[in-house]
Each structure stands twice: as structure tokens, then as C-alpha cells.
Amino acid sequence: MLKNIDPLLNADLLWVLAAMGHGDDLALVDANHPADTVASHCIVKKPLRVSAASMADVARAILTVFPLDDFTDDPVRRMEVVGAPAEVPLIQREVQGIVDAVQGHPSPMAGIERYAFYDAAKKSFAVVQVNDARPYGCFLFRKGIIAG
Image (cartoon, rainbow, N blue to C red; front, top):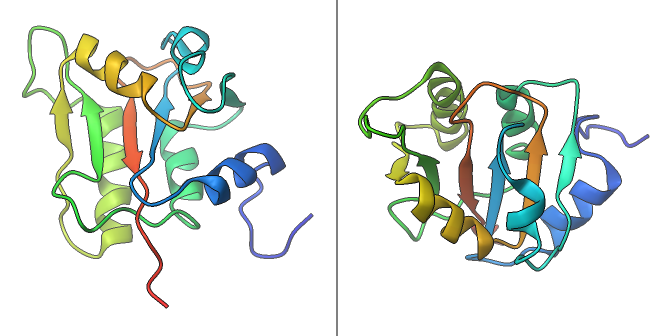
């Protein structure tokens, strides 16, 4: 056990978050996402799974140690709802609230069409799959830097 580290951040997930570099993407996806297929194209070839937690809880835990990229306008992107790209489901609103709190200001997520999201996720460093079955709980987090 580590002090001041959220228990949702297991050893494998902490290693991935630390190994990523500036500009690398992390795909944070729901239980419905084809995580194994997508992860087979990533640097980390198998998805990391987090169970018994909501998407919001996992996003919050990750963002306690993961700096978002502030050199880009879209450090967090979301999968758009098919046929209703402007719709923002509850799961996405929950994560948006966490992102805004971490950033200290509103930081709207950019939407990505479903199949374009899959393609972008294949270029991620790793895929983290959360056992949250609500649809459209799929996000890309771009890693930033810690200014020293």
C-alpha cells in the first residue's frame, strides 16, 4: 500500500501513467468498448481493467497523478453519441465535471465520431477499461508535463 495514492491506481496502471510521455494519449473506456481489439494496436498491448468503480471514480483517481496537456485545446476528448454528436450523456458530464475541477476552469471536451474515436484510441499508449456499462463512457486523455 502506498500513502496518498488512490487505491484504484494499481501497480500496472501507475506504471503506465508514469511511463507515458508528453503528448501520449490514454484511452479510458467503458465496459462496452472493444478494449482488447483496440489495445492490440497500442504500446501496451492488453487493456488494464479497473472493476468495482464508476468511470467518474477512475477518472478522478487518474487525474490525481496525471497532468493534462495544456499545450493543446483538446487534452480530453470524448466519443460522440451516434446520430446526436452534440448530446452529452450523464457519464460524460460526470467526467467533464472532474476535468473542470482538476483544471481549475471549464475545459470542454472535444467530440470525436465513434469510428474516428476507435482509430484515435488505437494510437494511444494504453487502454484502461472501467467496468462501467453506461454507453459512451469513452475518453482520450493527453498527457502533459509537470513544470519544474
